[in-house]
Length: 191
Image (cartoon, rainbow, N blue to C red; front, side):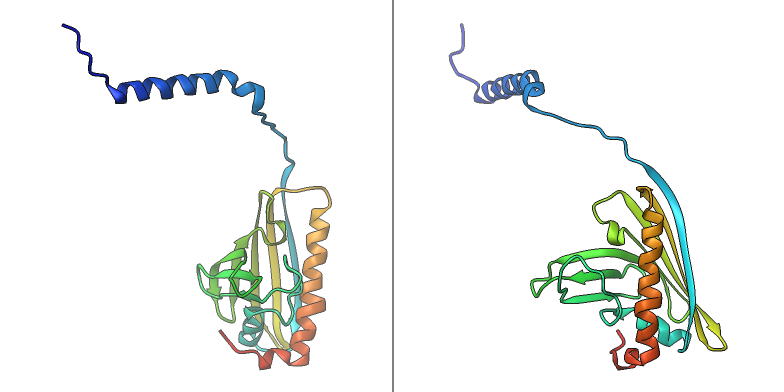
């Protein structure tokens, strides 16, 4: 005797299987993919200068709220630019009161007055680039020798090494140095 009871689960499985088979057969006609070769490479940029403040003061000026000297951002007028100087802390740019923004890098080493290291794409967001940036705060008779080392690897276009070098020269010599020399860092709240 034949059963006349239908199995709805079996019917659904057959229907879904047929739909998937039809999709796989017709997919090449409307799905497109493209593979591109990317130029990859690596380079290091290192700059140093002597600043007229203690290593702890320079460290504090270079972390926490950095809007007094850092002037490159993804938004025209960021609400906040800051570096949380602790392992796992972020180098953040907050766009607005809603908290929209970008994490430029993550702090992987923090030793106040001695060394700060963070890893992230910084200005290369959206590219397959990793930048390990290290600030070394070295005691000097005139204050602090700040050494900034950037190890860059990944999707690198020709000439980007010169661009990175110029940008860090701008930050360190044209922005941070006058910020320290003016004493403006002393009015900043330490985080």
